Amino acid sequence: MAAVFSKWPWFGRNRGGSLAFTLNENLLRYVFASETSERGATIEAWGSELRGNQTREAFLKRAKAILPTAERVIAVLDPRDYQILQIEAPGVPAEELHSAVRWRAMEFVEGSPHDYTLDVLTVPTDPGRPGSVIAVIAHNDTIRTRMLDCKALGHPIAAIDVGEMAQRNLLHAALLAEASVPGVAAALVADGGRALMIIAVQGQLHFFRRFEFDVDILAAAVDELQSALMGTGAEADAVTRSLTQLHRSLDLWEDANLQNPISTLRVFAGAKSAAIIARLKTETGLDTRPLALESIFKVPISRAPPPWLDPAYFPLLGALLRPTEVE
Image 1 (tube, rainbow, N blue to C red):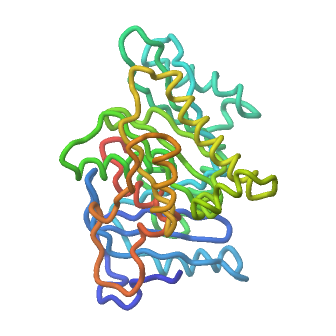
Image 2: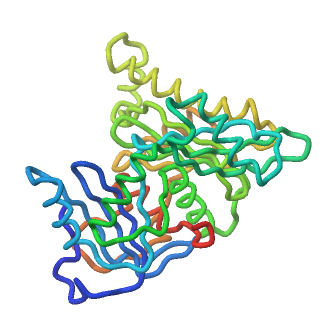
């Protein structure tokens, strides 16, 4: 998808606002907003650029010319660039928590603790229950590369974000737009044969899991789906794996959080969202509704589809809603 703002009169001018982007060896994707808050954003530009046959240097030079200048810049890591773990909180003073989590996390990664950049989020718990923390771990080489890329783009970054936190931000904003905000809510976003589910309690991230989820098969008509379930071919296997992973995710939450049952499940699966929602409502028995983002984002009149119709933009849209006080 090419840029949707290249002919706008302000293209190339210095502006305020917030820019969220993700960059890997072959692709740049970005969203620019003139105004942001935890409740939503006014989107001014979005798009993606493929590297093609260009050298890395030439690609970054082209990307630099495309991106609008922003006061606040957030780089969003690709899921392959980091690990995110939820572990029991070490019994240490607050000032020693980060160091203790770093050493504990080494059970899950290779190399020295000093080879990694670590961010730690404390998960609130009820009195008398063991606490936990969420740790985001990225190799220093990955962070260094992203920092150098941002420097080449002329966009020093204010923060680095990840998809799990961004999806929490989207769910939180969508619920704030409603008359009543449920205390425990889940969001499932499915794309490309995979899904990310997060669960938030009082707006705070408490659970996350990525798993296989075949939207095309699950969105099939009921009679076709029943036939697949009764069969033994690849479609039946895909249905079984998808539903098993979904239930495993819900069971993991329920087994550890009987006092916090999920009040609502919000779902986005592209053009198949309605069919998936109908299927999951029956499958889970939960209040299952669309993850409605059109109510929290504003966009200019454009012939291009708005970015919230493409789940590839979700991490960027969610990153824009990141509270500035955490940066």
